[in-house]
Image (cartoon, rainbow, N blue to C red; front, top):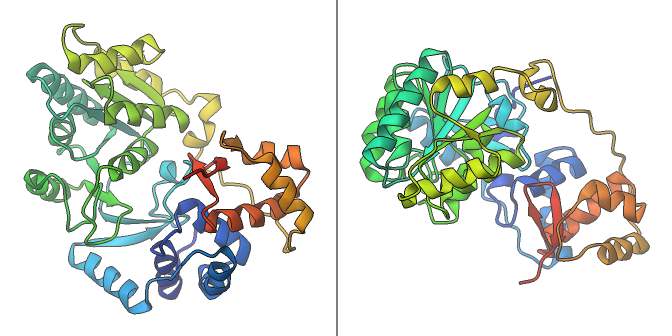
Length: 370
């Protein structure tokens, strides 16, 4: 069941997610623990003191300014669980609780394919990308990419007439690269969408691009890699797609071209070889039972039945003894320690806020060693 936040709830969500040391995983834990963003904001001072780690929420005025600033760019804040929140994205681990979204009202957000690749793309790579994007669009698919130079740019331009989604690494007022600002306007003018989880004024840094890449794959049924070096952001996107239970495709290339190394490696490792759009459409159009939630519009996540009770010292000790520098699934921790799920949630929240654990893909947790 999807519901719209009230204006007051939206501001509370924004204040909470913009708080230092609170990311998507911690945000969800706080909502589960306290029932609402408003209640979590009230609890922050006590939690911060207990964890010995500063957590100061942004002011209500600053949150209101961000919402007003987004409106000037034709964008709006959309919360996970609201009808406008992309359903595929909401199913990934560590999905952003709030996204800033412009355009996209007429797009098909369910039939989506990501296309990524080299920034210094070859002429052949650009030509192949244009062909794939145009044919996917003609078949009714929305093309998703990251607005970068090279392959991303070619994918967006070829799918302008049919619909494309550009995921930004920075804020709406910090589009990168600058040369693609006109392309961003073209995307909106043609009914496409721009999307980011970053606040206004956020200049993208190197570590923000993998964060963006997880959204590109999370929005898509499958991801196509067209030209990628052996160590590249495109291969990070492919790995994230696999973790998110998406299909991964790669266009083969010459063994003599370093830009083909990554794609060829993906094929060697089991990625699906692509020579035309039909290769992609055949796979993503068949609802794999292992990914049925991506295709079932009626599916909803199970309700949270947790009850409110405080952990005891013995349970904290058991959890710390079970954790190590090797990431482990929370479900496995519950089995090993015998700690009730709702108590485990509280303990992990305390450790997370205290900076004592780190998360991988929003599901695996490990002790932090800085």
